[in-house]
Length: 438
View (cartoon, rainbow, N blue to C red):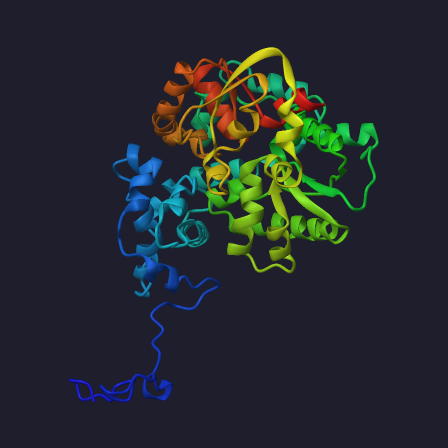
């Protein structure tokens, strides 16, 4: 017996074997779709996540990832506990995942807590909710704008238009709205007649994402040309948004609807022998990590296992080093490279620097491991704009000190922030690879 007079679960002090009939398990958390007890209990409060958080560094009122993750879930032992409103200040950069020595699923906890807060506690007619819903569903509005791109681009440049947007919706007027391409990537794809190479043994399904389709189709075109140079048959299946901006704003129902379409179409491509390739590191991270963490959809694990970032895949499957060994860029160019947070989460922080370091005529300088600060929709919110610029200040400084006057990154919103903070032209590594090998 124990000191309290209750029979020991091990059958006594001399017994090493657990007797499951000797005790009753206690459910300390209310039931739900996601049970994160194990992850919460793995946290031993070392605060590594807090010290790595770029938001906590500039926002004294933000309690940090440790509170937003494990402590939120511990507090859910109390039936009357609500999710703390500060969860909406998390930018979803996911740097805390890398920092944690105990592999606590911090970003998964943040996503679930944010989703619960938005669903159960946020006023659906509030300006914040409407603004966040619009930002999260960028694809919907971009699809409309792409039908009349010149008109849409002109409308955003009308004097006072952005100021009006700030007053009505809380979207910052400090930024210039990205221009819509006069021809989307998918329109270009159809016009060229689709794939130019057929090879059932060497296929990839391109997940282009929203931005490469509506705003920077040159990135998608570079991806296609580079992959065809290496003999791949490129497939472009029907797709919706990866869900990244929806995760960041707690719109999990929206994200699930998009995920169901994406998984269905990508699974079909995988069944035809293709691997999934994304040119945006946030898209590849969403398909690889956030989908299986948050959704139970048939085929979702297969999509996760077959998804790669575009440059990563070529570095794995092709002799890219040998291909580039004897190449030379016609005009010498210097680049200031920034690795997105979502590239770091996938172990891809040095891939561009390593890929081009021996190419004649190319100088690639890594501008450090700081966050760009924009974190997708975070830096587009009026109340977060100044904080996003404070976070990005270190990156801006390193870029200005670099020899290069062209920026480079795999993330389209990081590219926005880099251009906004420095005035540099920004390219994707696939565009440089196209210039080098095609």
